[in-house]
Image (tube, rainbow, N blue to C red; front, top):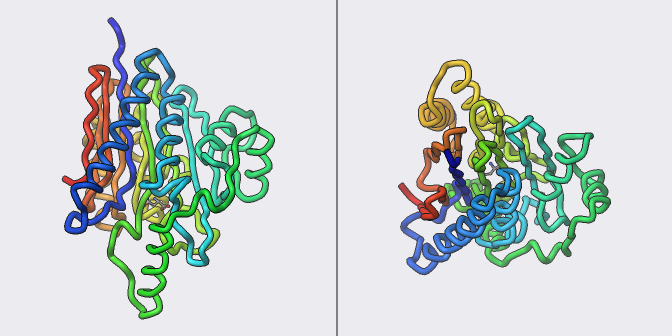
Length: 309
Ligand code: ASP
C-alpha cells in the first residue's frame, strides 16, 4: 500500500490581534503559509525525507520577514538579535540545536549541520558561529535580519516598560516558526526557529532549541514544534511529554497534545500552542491564545491555512 505524507507548519502564536488585522495583511500570511506548504509538499511527494522537509519549510519561514525567525527576527532589550533553532530526526532521535546566534542566514541549517556531525547536540555563541563557518553555511550582515516593523515593536515595548507597564499584545510577546512532517517512508521529523520575544534579556534562550521542550521527534510516537511562553514550555518539557503520554499512557496524539496545551500549560501562564504529527499522519495543532499562524498539507495536495480559531 502506498504510504502517505503529512506536513504542518506554524508561524508562531504571536498573531496580530484580530481587531488589528486587515484583509490585506491576513492574505499575506495565508499566501506565505500556502506557498511554503505547496513547495515543500513537492519534496515529500517525490520521496524526500521528513528531515529535509522540515528544514526546507523552516528555511522558507526564516527568509520571510512576516515571521519572527531569521530575516525579521525580533530585537532584544538592548537592540540586538539572538536566534535559537533546533531540528530532530525521529528515526534515531538525532538532533541539533543552536542558541543565541546572529549571522548565519538560516539558523535551522546550522542546527541541521550539527545534527549531521557526531559531536555536540547544542551549541551557542562564537563556537556555534565558527562551526557554521566551517560547515560552509551562508552568513548575512546584521542589517539583513533587521526590519522597521520589529524596530517599532521594540520601541513600543521599551516605552511601555519605562511607564512600568507590560504589553499584552501577543504579536509583541510571541513568534516562532516551526514544521513537523511524516514522509512516505513513515519517518517523522520536527524543526523550530525563533528570535524569541521582543525585549527579551540578552543571553536568554527559550524553549525552541531545547530538545523535548520546543522541539521533539521520535518515530515511536510523534513530532512536535511549539510556540509560546518559552519558560513554561521548558519547565513542563512540553514537546516530549506529549510523546510520553502517547507511549506510556496510550493516548492519541490529539488527546496528548490537547492535554498539554489546555490542561498543563494554560493554567500556568503557558500561553501558546504547538503543531504535531504522529506516525499515522494524524495532525494536531492546539493553541490556548487568540491564534496561531498555521497550515497543513497531505498527500492529496490541498493546503489548508488558518490564523484564528
Ligand atoms: N517560544 C519562543 C521563545 O520562548 C517564543 C514564541 O514562540 O513565542 O523563545
